Length: 153
Image (cartoon, rainbow, N blue to C red):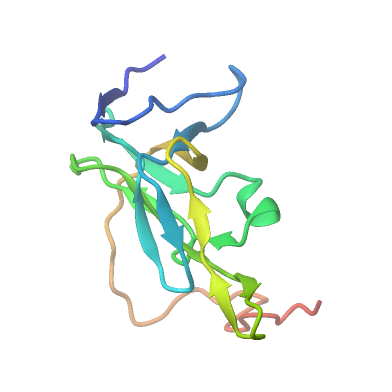
């Protein structure tokens, strides 16, 4: 077992695991934020000091994509070992609820994240060190340069 230092900020909640054998810790919104079609950063209420040789990934909780319109536009957040600021998650809303008035006018309603909502999960990862070497050619493979969708549906 290794120690990971967490500094809670005002209003922050310590990340938690629902079960001892869970791979990730749930993280909580430190603030109330309205999320529309443009990406917004939501503070998670803590700063972190991973042990030397480790970093942290911030991903949406599994249920976020199913139960809410929230999407993390950068896919996953990487918290480098040397970063000591507040850990945040970036979200945008894929679809917004429509609101109508008596005159038939409508507008989109942003998705509201409430303070204390579990909105992300944090995974501790071992950092592998490598040296990038520029070469003129790479080894040939059966796949070659075939990319996205090249193996069919």
